[in-house]
Length: 427
Image 1 (tube, one colour):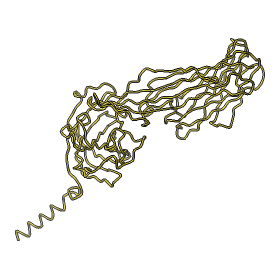
Image 2: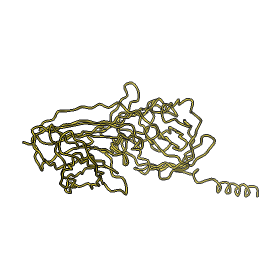
Image 3: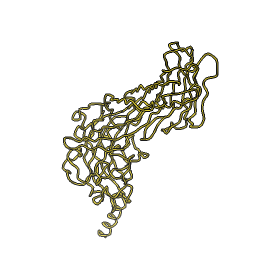
Image 4: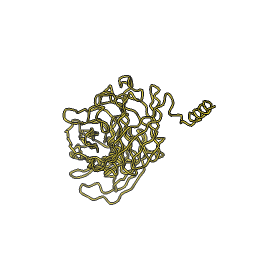
């Protein structure tokens, strides 16, 4: 009878054990480093640290996607966590794996800002457990945007069945980068550096750039420098008559991320998508076109614009066009301005001169609800000029105003400008 009671008690106990304790599930607890109330710039990491721990209840890796569920504890609070992401090859070390995290299943306001498997990590890459140096390790960074708490963990890959994973077995993508600091910290922008090139065939060319450095809040990881460069230009001819065209263009020519992880550990990943944008949806890139001359000036009869760009969801790609009208004589003032909406089209032109003595001498474009991000993105304006009085020396100028945004387009860091001009005659 005693044996029967014991067996019944054992069956009851087993029935009450939660499912995650069985085979194919893990029940490990890992210590972490939590920085709480993190300033947006220049934190003192040691003053912000509090204890933290991560209990992993279950993990699944199907050959492409990794998912982890568990509980995170810090500040005497326990939060449920769900981590998932698709595996890609790292842009820094081809043997490492970077996971493209999906944060749809956030719990308690937590986001995963870094999920990376290091093949042979060094101490700079290990925040929570430096004893794992040289051992394949999964690094997880959680971030609470509202509380500004950053919590990091280092988990031995072998504990999750990831010991045989190698980045060379996965695809590399320019849009899935190793960068994470920009998701947490505000950066510092470098002073602009412009190069003006005197072009042939009446072309003037300039450069605009945005370089933002994000410093790792832990102080021993990799600082990130996100850079983007663009080319500005105005193109015409040495002789322009009534009906000829003047074009302006701004184009993203290159971008990349530099990871500076200490002396001798410097990696530049060319083409990697960055946190830098040219223009904002409500603070767009602007191009101003102005005609001048020694006696008389030319003017815009009609104009158009087109390009390749990122468009604001649910908004049309319509540029705001402000046209300044005034007398044709050089040195006279603009009398009034009219505003137009111009849809993006390489074939449809907007007429802005309707006859009479008020000539459309200035045309200012605002590329509302669009911005430039990817290499190859551009805006082009093409203006059909009018000539009222011919002259041997005239000038048309283009002024580019380029807001530089960081943190995936959410923070305005600076506004770059580029002034270009070409001279020409009417005969």
